[in-house]
Length: 395
Image (tube, rainbow, N blue to C red; front, top):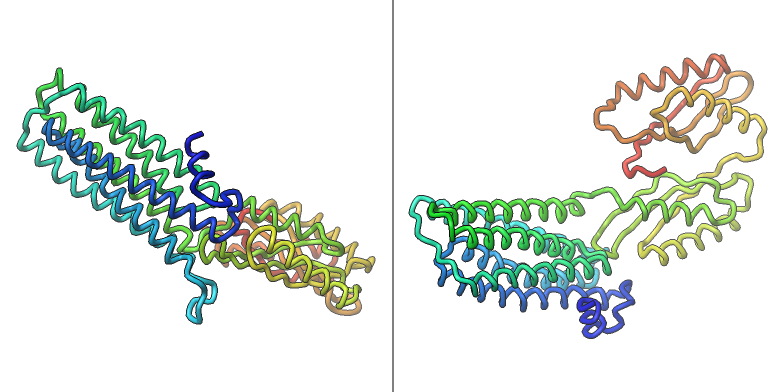
């Protein structure tokens, strides 16, 4: 409830998350809250660590200080990503938000490695950890604050679909785990005399490193070109098929240039005997409505298909029966017949699941087998096919 109250109180028009200004406000506000709370946590834990002579608490304190730097970089990332397009970057600078998250991830890992070294030295040169109730309670309070920060960033990240804020949420939750280890170290120091603090410090450091690795993976994937969200793919395809005369859709490609800066292209199957002017108007309307609904720039390519010729329809049904023997094939599209007389070519595309182990030799073998089965029905026909890989998992 507090998170939603703060969002509604400090972000103007907070419900209009498709608005670029509102989205940037989410990023700035999330970063500012992170700076304030992590500075408080750093100061508190550093004091407690010095008082109790606990390297684990000091390590956890400097982890919070790195979170301050992370929040600063997050704000800068949103600021730079909001720069308008220019000649060198016609689709804007949105990917800078991902890059800022990547920088934060490397900073987290660096902190983790630094405190592995410090904790190891603590094991070699041990000193007593002094348990005190007040510092222990402060650590517990910091755990509660970090739980709230994680939830707050999660709500913010989901609201604007920001990988940077979602990563901050994951980072904060890892801090909950590390701080819990520190609290356990303090508590066990009452009964344990060996340098448990150093071992707990190494455990905390490993948690920090793992959190950094997870953040790198999440922020690096959009830069590498990850597959689009399956719900987005289904939504675009379903919406496109709702328009008159569009009977099929395939070959959807989406390029991510940053949050809210996507460009897509898709092929739409339309009757070959319809007026070009009429279908062009429908395609234009579909492009505009889908682009507005899903907040992207969509280009639709028309694939004319024969939907009335009896021979074409019959041959297509026969081909589908043949392809039932090949479970690897998910669907076909762009089916047509070329040639005259008895000797004809059936031209079509087949869609198979993406499998990196399915080689060109396997593709050739698949084509040969389909032709063998097809000739049992049409001895004078040849199948000329193109194999499409389903990279996005939805057809």
